[in-house]
Amino acid sequence: MMSELLLLQPVFKDRIWGGTLLKKEFNYNIPTNTTGECWAISAHPEGESIITNGKLKGMTLSKVYQDHPELFNHCESKTFPLLTKIIDAAQDLSVQVHPDDDYALKYTKDRGKTECWYVLDAVEGASMIFGHKAQTKEEFISLIEQGKWDELLIRREVKKGDFIYVPAGTIHALCKGTMVLETQQSSDTTYRLYDYDRTDALGNKRQLHIKESIDVTTIPHSDFCLMTKVTQIGKNVNTKFVSNQFFTVEKWDIQDYIQFPNTRFYIISVIEGEGLINLTKVTKGMHLIITSAAKEVKLEGKFSVIASYL
Ligand code: ZN
Image (cartoon, rainbow, N blue to C red; front, side, top):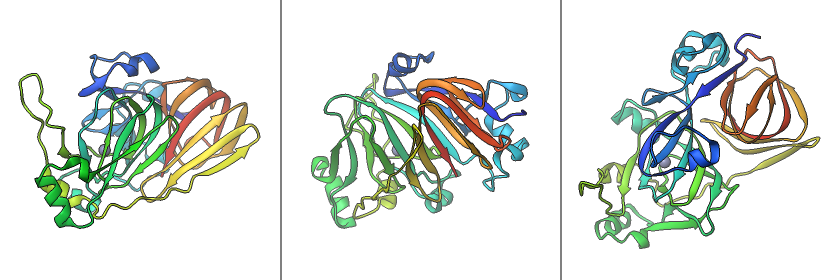
């Protein structure tokens, strides 16, 4: 069948906090020993996936999205709405916050950024920063001005298999020893609040965006309660983590065979095992889109994917 599946070639990003786990874990051909991000399914101008199969081979995802709306169920979004990454935090990431769509539209040409993480791996005792303790904007600003970061920031443990939802306006930072699969709105707008006073080889600190961070942070912090829904279908399990106006994110654990009718497009990252998706062989580390040209989704084998859709 025509373009039922689009297989995608990822783009890699060197980051000062990156490492080599993307090679060790997924056998990717990473460009440096500080590779922090794999942009797995991306039509963002900062790093675009290329189609590697079928008659659209060699085209960018943004071009295919533009020229073939029928493959994306004639999606209303003018540009491809989502971005999937794998992040290897070998060191702590800066403490940051993302704007919502309204703020981003006003001050940047990008979207806002609500994101979420499925934790692929975490070392014993790994943690992350998620949220802050200030009750008012005045208190928030005062703690920043005094550099009382430990008083301000909330630190939590993370472990393999956790799912973390990070709405726009939430202070957050992945910390060292964590690898996540990130699903996010297709955006590259990050406001850096604190970078641990780190310097690069030349002694320079990375740019901070204190004013913007204060503008967009939700105060007081509010924890979002996720209602994870687990559905058993024979031996196979569907876990729905989150579903909102930006995306739905699920994990599919396939043990034998499952088939269901389709009208939408799915963004798929294979995180474990191998099998067949609509008769195409897939293995751990592959990223693809099941397009709306596929009238059915057929999954066979022993593998797990993170699937997202609108
Ligand atoms: Zn972020």
